[in-house]
Length: 474
Ligand code: BGP
Image (cartoon, rainbow, N blue to C red; front, side, top):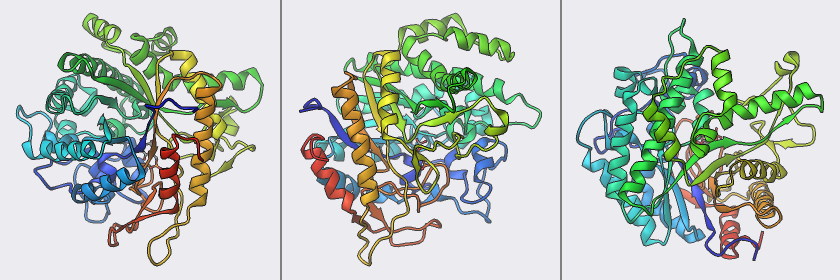
């Protein structure tokens, strides 16, 4: 057998993309609730268009999600039917602390996640909890400026303390921040950052990144103090960058793009700012308010595993003219003529997953966990809602084969695999429903209209037998 017997199989979602129920159970508003569907979405995600309350002209997909808030029992039962041994989901911070800075948590919010956790355990599924997946209470943005403020570390730790204490003995796998490097690309969505026009955005972003890195280390410390069995992961939006040509200038350009991501994991896994980062910050005149206490915390509380998302590789060039042709909503890339692309232009590169895993494992030598991977595609259901999604099966089978190769031929230590959007959900980048990833079709359109009915796709039974065979039968 290629994969270890205890290999974890499952799927992943994020609170704001599935839950809905934005005003139920005492929940407060969060940044992600206020990212509209439509043409302004990208400016809002980037923090350059401020939207701190609902505006009647826009539709906000996170308000409704797929209403998992009220369907979680049915949905987890479907995951169990596929044989999941792990389910990755995230916490809506403002369900637990509606404002973010109050001393006492909202019991109804905790109870909701307690029911999710218990439901998973009842079905033999290990919860893998992302503490912050693009999520920040709106009050923390308005009053403190979100992660540009050091005080955020304390508020985040209050949330962590509630979770680690209440779920002690039930949940052992945690991720501190989803795709922490996304802070540089979509600062409002990822970290609640809003910018003034004349402001030095790079200074704000790297300062906020520092506070998140310190918060992540402090959370790791706290998790171990509360339960030494806790296993903590960082989480990176990964995917190697290939040089457009063998011209050393292009090779260097690709390396520079990689470093924007490794900046984060180098700190979280090695425990200090790498030399190139110190120089880069100096060069750009960016000042990180790092204290001696921060340094000790970062050094002594590195993570146990590296979680990452992988959708695609990218291509980088040193040629500024060529770079103007780059496409891709969050991570711009040049076209790779050797690859096909999804309907959203995300280039499909299963071999790139093996390459990326080798890059990460060579660099860090700690266990990896693929916590997101999948194909966003337009599905056409028949009258009963059934979808013959052979393209999705094909994508997943090739990527599973790639990580099996990384494990069996390259010796990479891999803890598990959770496909992204195991049930159809709202797309983070586009806010669409029609960009579907799931094994389960959800009858809702881009405006949230539809019955919300769940139907198993063809890939549902396929994934079930993949899991039953521990990845042998693809
Ligand atoms: C990652 C996020 C997810 C998810 C995924 C797919 O960046 O962690 O939240 O949405 O990408 O992206 P999209 O929804 O844009 O297709």
